[in-house]
Length: 400
Image 1 (tube, rainbow, N blue to C red):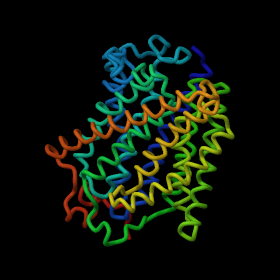
Image 2 (image 1 turned 90 degrees about the horizontal axis):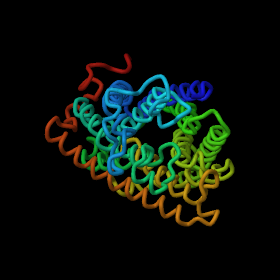
Image 3 (image 1 turned 60 degrees about the vertical axis):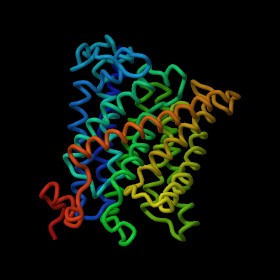
Image 4 (image 1 turned 135 degrees about the vertical axis):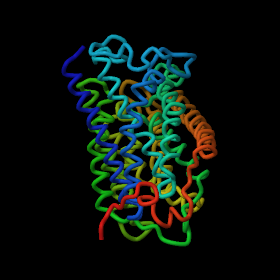
């Protein structure tokens, strides 16, 4: 066990935890003022719900003894055997509790990401049930497949910090939810204008800050790989913010603050699977592509007409997919991609993308239908008119 590594990963876990309140602010600023608290709540409450589920059963399903490459066993249920030493820890240099809580923070933010797709129209009780089931039936298996010794891990899929586990999974779920729950009342006939873009910019800044824990921490040691992942993360994000506003400038006539924030998040998403596998300059190139591609995804959403309220599919789904495939091309650190003559790695990445989208979309479909039929998910028109803050929480975000 390494005490320096332990301190570093605990700090990184705290940074990743901070990302979820950052996401709450990012999403909260993008909705109408009558829905700000309900939207923030859908992210913030994941710190409570997911943390409890992770400790009880989620962690063991993700990192317990492999069962057929599909799921972990119940070795660590109720954190049995997860202690202050490294016994049983997937990272031998870390106390088992440190590894567990670092992974917990990834689990917390992933279902929170999905909430942007159905913002302003999902009932809170149904949301809680949906999120709990999704964590256990979608996130935990995906985490095991990629990081827990499952079949994608065995196949050699590269996902340094969560391109598939976090972003493609939430993007596929977001697309499914946006289609199934239907559009917000007034969608297409009235403008849904973000009520507080300064809040959104603050949230984006917190996400950028916390993402260093997300990606650099995934090295699981305070070493050169962590430094490389940190630099790659920053350069890709900076490049994506710039390429997004340039694309927006050319296409729409003016650059926007929302575009800069969205571009930064797109860069963060796209570099996530690649952060520990690509050089800083390759990361910069990857980021330039991310800004343009994800901006294109937003335009495509408008043409297709589904109501992904806060662009989860275009940024997290598409950005994660692009990043995973780009990793198969640009990988030069600890793995060889297409640039070094290894075309097989790109094929493996492609298989991982298809498997992630298919599994997460299908399972989300089943979970959504079951919860909607039992608890109910979509708020009625009267509640949407009143605003979800009042309808679901009897609160208002602002006193005028």
